[in-house]
Image (cartoon, rainbow, N blue to C red; front, side, top):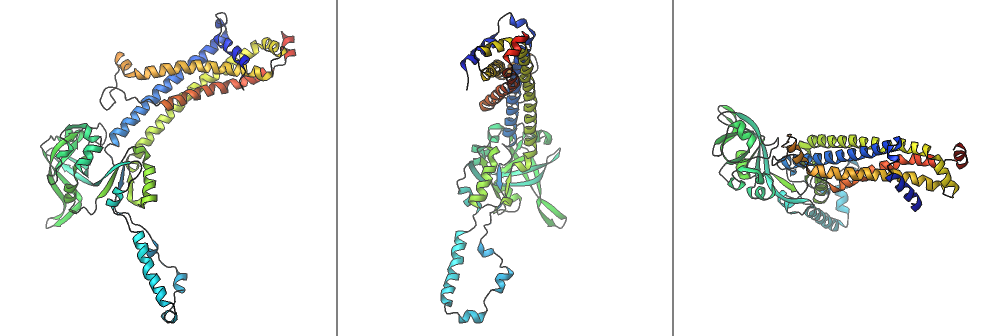
Length: 458
């Protein structure tokens, strides 16, 4: 319960007049408020920049890597495939016992009907049927195939991942289509053996739009009189994309039918299904739906975590450690309130004793100092919140003004910044909570002051 008188006294003391501002206690008080403000300001700036960098990685890398890939047709398990145990085999009736059973016809009809019903009820789903099943969190899906290959130009040789895609789906649902420097995905016509490569790969291969590259796939090699030869084909570069990620020099896009022919599988019997998610970080919920509702085996599901998980784990750990470090700075500033309030309690023992002799309860005395610490925290958190939001919004302009611009955003115009309102509010409330906790010890010490002894010392 809050006491209006306690709040009034705490607020009057938190305001402090000019005479008290010269005291050492007031100096420590203002120092703790400044520390809270600077710590919270730094935390808001750092967290916003780290969120922006994480968002850029999510956009650049997960815009290329498949979110979820179902590698082959899921297999449903049922009782028909169950292997009988030794005990069940031992209980199997002999032919003589079966012949002497009067209800043989009835049992025969039951055994002939049940397996058929179970087989139809637990029929395995094809990849096409999985793609037609509505799944929460999945935007769309497409037939897909990926192969490891070597690309040879006139000047260099590079290993790449060849992605066989459907151009219309890629054009509508991927970020790569929005970062095309030359060409477009609609140029990947069936049978044209055209390819779209990243800008980094084009620079390393010294290739331009219209050049021809030799693609060799060892996974579809054949035996010839000259030995084992990989499947190879000349492809024409029809487009160049630039996502600004480490995957730009490792990926080549081709039409799915062309990749199947390159892999000597024109019917596409080994192609997989690629799922596009509305949020790649929510992949686990989609995987759970695929395994529980659709019946896809976990062994047939590949997610982006298998390839890029360590990178995002490192970024997340770095962000958490930076947040923890700056929270400790706020905690140090907040606990400066302890020393300030302890000295206030020592200095104001006579005033506290007078209030108690006039009828103020010890709990009311305690709330005076708790609310005093809270008011100091509100001042520091308010100043830090305003400065943090303002500097974060103007950070790129400030860097340009001091001559230290950083072009890390996708458009090359500065630092990527992403402000999370919920996160900022949570940090601010946590700072206020630390201030309240720091005020508990001095408040309890003030509550235990004996009026008679304090007035006698006065």
